[in-house]
Image (cartoon, rainbow, N blue to C red; front, top):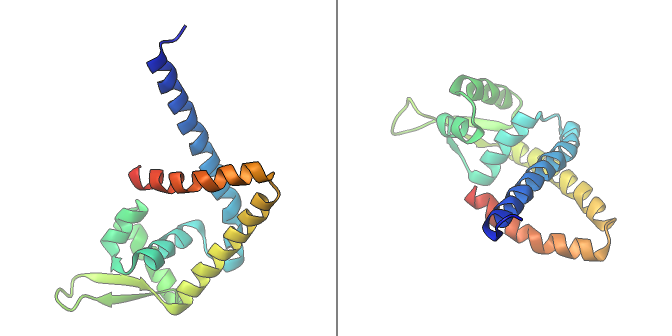
Length: 149
């Protein structure tokens, strides 16, 4: 028989593993809604960081997206060409470039998010009321957990 502390640890690990799998599967399925916007997953992710986090340097965006600076520079150049972001030179230090979303970029991202949320809402609506209630309660805890990870 496993001691109580080890049982609890095993349960926590199992829960973490299931949450990880569920989050990845959910995001992969919802990501297909982005196809209608013409945004690849990396572009949608970078645009989301800019829309919800505000303008930032290319270096900060590369760190947020966990990519190398040349990768983010190339992506931002393409997104700027498409009118989704605007790159400006810092007035105090002209070596620093800041990138922020354009109104068009914000609209495209918000539309993509609305499609993902609508698809998720339809799936939630098909669940029994007790499961919907459980997920509603858990969503606040999941957001808090995401802040701590």
